Image 1: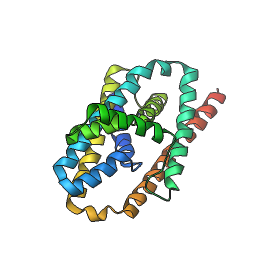
Image 2: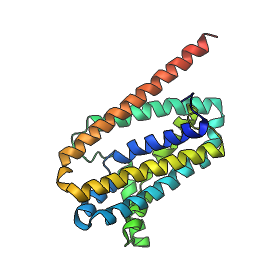
Image 3: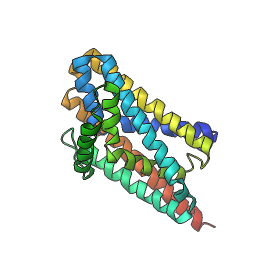
Image 4: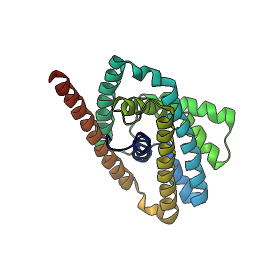
Length: 231
């Protein structure tokens, strides 16, 4: 996003990415909102989404503030760019060719154990804290934002400045809440449309989006190599 001011570029990167990654994979939060929205209505589902979005924004902030120093090294920056390319292609292909809504990963078992322990200790009863604790126990969310933060900064979509990082986090907050709000409203108004087949189709579409982004990353890496060799 070279033609946009750094703040706008960072905010857009955060918003669009949060919107895509909140909708896929169809994980515990989306399924919880669908199930609870069907039973208890829009407000309850919305509060679950708000709690989940709050914890996701915290993880996003940790990814930018805790790992930004790694991105200043050119070798590490290039390595993370290559890793993010492979990561996006792998995750995108996995969800594109999924045959069921729930696609297990190696982190699922560990995340489930953490979630159970957090539930036992914190005993969340309100809708907001249910969403908050479920994302807190999901290790995949933190890992994803670490990879995405590296990808943003490797491509200079988010400048290594405090203002740009805040703008990106604000975009993530807006995108995540926008998705959960739309999902909560849709479920409360017509939950029958959210069949397993519909969710699986949504997962496939999002998988295509991830593969496209991964291919764009690959093209960017090739362009950088060609540009480097031309000098």
